[in-house]
Each structure stands twice: as structure tokens, then as C-alpha cells.
Length: 429
Image (cartoon, rainbow, N blue to C red; front, side, top):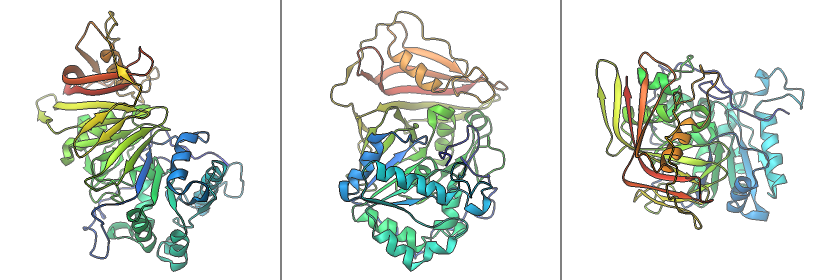
């Protein structure tokens, strides 16, 4: 079987983009339970979850009961077997059922007592309201949502434009409220979002043109679903594949356009672990080899001049393995063993003329924004640096500044692994 992966520049990994003018739907109906908080936990991965990531798989399994864990795997965001030309070939298939088997096998390899595919997809939408499937869900101690096209989760589990809980989603929501773990990768993390869930788009086009409600055939167009996803995590917007696809710009623009003051920008193969989501005790930890960017827009201001849109006053922080975050108090706590960075680099911060890793630049470098932030953090010579977009017309500049509140920590004495409080301004040139 082919390992489920996300395409570099599709709006929705693994799926066909849809235009939604119809369904920017009514508010969730009265029959949709929306608990004020949950006793359970979330493990949200920014995509690209590797089969050998024992840290993340182990965390999910441990939270689901360890050796007695029973994991329900939901892959309704994948194409169904009827749309997979390789459905009959286990070596090539990439549909909901074979992707479900793939993840179920991995959870068992990593130590779960049992892992089962929950048989819901575009070929089996009715199963989302099946009492038999609800019983299967209720026998599980944890859940994993795979990647693909997040609107397929809306179609199958939220009754599409009605945006009301199916019986299965209501059962999962109730399990989370009672202490279960809910996890997901890529689209499976994105669907945990509340209002204004991102549906696609690239940074440059987002900064230039702004965001629009809907799903679009143009994968570069910045879109969002006002009614959002499942609403498991509401303390900030969620974005995925952030540094790998250069999505920092689109995350800033969408948050500013929709009035959100925080974004969790998740990196690949790394998890945001959320305890007690939606409660006054919500708390967060980063787990894995990369990190999570947290964008703070509480003091951000936008403008529009002849050349285009601009943003000042945003704050960028990047947390890595073991770092903790209190979303209710907006506090970062570096992991034990990390120590403050003592800037020693005397050379200038390297020039960066593709800060958002443009798909149009064959020489582009992923994690470009992060690389510049870390270089500035380690610099003894500079407190401010400027990077630019690859595209012009207009070209956007990103100014990064070490001001009051900036800190950085290291694990090895030289690299600024964790960076907090870096001021960000975006402007057209």
C-alpha cells in the first residue's frame, strides 16, 4: 500500500478542491452538542507522520490506555475505494479503507491492543448515523483521523452544509468529554478546528488577495470555512505543514481577516498535545522532532495602501520538543534542560529572498521563515532583519525584530531551538 501523503501544492492534500458558495452553512443546529470543555486530550500532528515516530504514536496509545488501548481509525477524508483505480492492489491503493488498515496496523505495531477502521467514507456516508458503528466507536478508548481532504469529514460526519453532528461524531465528542484522546494528522488535525477553518491557499496569494469563504479549484487561493470543523480546539486557528509549505504568510492573513488573535501553525511529524481542551485548564505541550509556531495577533494592526495589504504588531514564537504553553495566560515555558541562547554570531543574518518557500522557486528552501528567525535569534550583530517573498508585484517584505519580550533557548548551546516573542511586520514593496 502507498503511504498516505500530502501533495506539495494542493489546497487539500489528497483531494479535489470544491467551490463552496452553497454551504457556508447555517449555524450548527440545536441537536449538535457543543460541550463547554473536555476532560480528554488532543494530539494534533501537522502532517507527514512517519511510521517510525514512536514518540507520537506512543503518546496517543498511552493516553488511550497503554497496553489496553483500542484505537478507532477514521479516514473519511481519503477517497473511497470506488474512486481509487488501484483499490484492488494492496501495494498501490490509497483509499479510505486501505489507509485505515495502514494506520490500524501501525498503531498495533506501536503497542495498541487493538486498532480498527471505522467504516465511514463517501461510499458509506449512512454509516455515520449507524447505531452499529456508534457501538463500535463506544468500544474504543482513542481515535485517530487521517489526512486527505478535510471537507470530506464535513460531508461524512457533519451532514455537509447542515453542519450538525452525525451520531458517530456525537459519540466521539462525548468520549472526548469523558477523557478519551482524539488525534489526527494533516486534514485530521485541521478538522479539529473551530470557526474559520482554513481550506487551502498559498502565502503570497493570500497576502496579495486576502481570504474568501469557501473551497476553491485554484489551490493558491486562500479559503476558509466560516462554520469551521469539529471545534475540538477553539483557542486558536490551526494550520498544518507550515514550514514545509511556507504557510506562515497565509496563517497571518487568515487570522487577521477573520478576527482571530492566535494561530497554532503545526509542523510535520510533530504533535501539539492539548490537555483539557476548551476549559480554563487547557494546556499544551509540543512533542516530536520539529516544532509548532504560535502566532499572536493581539496587538496586530492591518493597513492598506496603494501597494497593498500590510500588518504590524504580530508576534512569532516557535516551540520545540518538550516546551509547554498555557493558552489562557499566553505563557511559554521551555523544556527542562534548555538554556537561554547567548548570541555569538558576528556575521549578518543570511539574506532571504523567498521567506514563504514559493512553489515557483526551484531553488527554494523549506522552513525558510524559521531559518531566518533562528539566525536572528543567534545574532550578536543584529536586532532586526528583513526577508522578502520570491514573487513580486508587489513583493512582500517580512521584518523580524528582537524587542522587549523576546527570548530564545537552546538544547545544544548553539542553535536557537525555541524562540518566543519575535516581532513581525509584513508590508508590500
